[in-house]
Amino acid sequence: MPKTTATDAGEQKLLDNIREFGWHCMQVFGDDEHEAFSYTVGLFQTYGHPELLIYGLPEEIAHAVLTIVANATANGTAINLGEATDMLLEGHSCVFVTVPLSAYPEHFGFARWYYDGDSFPVEQVVWPSRTGLFPWHPEASQEFRAKQPVLGQYERAS
Image 1 (cartoon, rainbow, N blue to C red):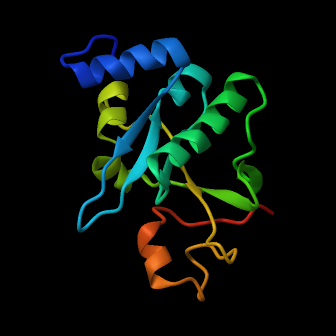
Image 2 (spheres, rainbow, N blue to C red; image 1 turned 120 degrees about the horizontal axis):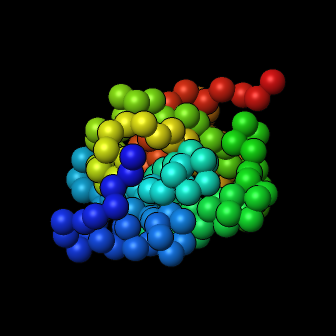
Image 3 (tube, one colour; image 1 turned 90 degrees about the horizontal axis):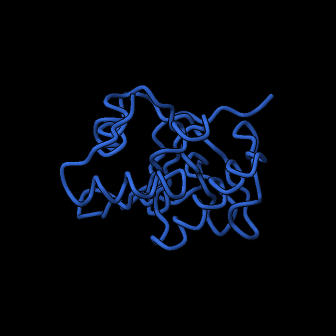
């Protein structure tokens, strides 16, 4: 059962946003060893939709991408996570990769607090380079791969 009471201002903001919008966007700042990323909290509880994570984009763009998915889900027109979509970034198709449970402790602190554990699915939004390569492509640059670490394995839709 998700949390309903907060012990600090950050938790309260998360709960307020989920009550008002159905979800909350967490921005995790990068440092010398880790890239910045953003993720949702509340999509699974509110809409039965997996939570989302996105790496390597500026905060405003990451939030806009997550908002597109959240709004589509709220409007009953959820994006098919099993297929590439061009609805998120103009001129580029994005794909989704299931995030393994082993990545939850390092990436989803507030989501784990909210859900009181790991009982929520997460999909990573993966976007291509300017040349159309995804991070797993052999010709993708090391810099691009480092900017957008892929937490799971990409499985093509059949």
